[in-house]
Image (tube, rainbow, N blue to C red; front, side):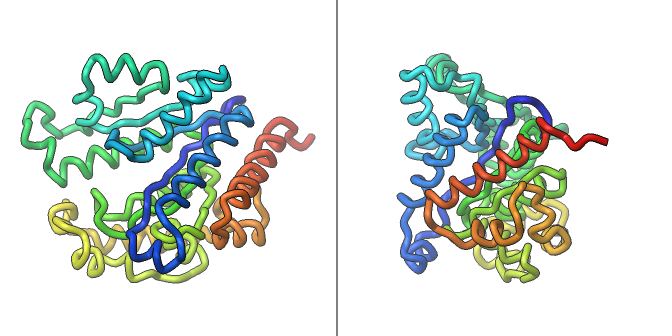
Length: 286
């Protein structure tokens, strides 16, 4: 972990409704653990980063609502929260929206990657183009945060060849970041937990994705989705829980990967972060 004030990236979205019902959960539970985690991370003096869009009633809006409350109490200013936006989300903001958001969060506008012609209006809704832009946002965010927490997430229907929360966990682990896997809420984070334990979930195969994700063949830009997904699975197999580098013991990571209790998730994440920051502040003497 790099700087003295750490930034914690949070990856979260709701799993499909049937899975939540099977687990006895609802979207309310996902939002609750997300809000509690953000609240405690900010209260502990760390910063928060989130990458997403600005859809109404989405997780970005829930994050901003919380920050507005904190701002009124002088507990967190816009410099404490980074909102990563991919093209064309940030390009479509009105001046009023920008002014309103400037009081809540620092907007990180991630450009479309080289080769994407942003002057072509048709590309704003083109699935392969959006997939490339989301990938660019994830890479930028990973390079600028100190740790990542993954919760929930759809296992199909994403805007890329790999389910979003899985992709964000994978890129963080591959980059050597501390990663916390809250796997008790189903969805993509559960797939990450299972794969770290050595399983090979069917959801992480191109055959499954082609049967469930609309336009999947168009998202598979180079016709190599099978090898991309296989490489993700292999990296997670090799990492295991010891590759999470998050300050938690193996049994604590197992607990985090199983519990659906928001208080337990928050306690475990904060425990790992405090151990990491203490270790960084007091390195062993040679």
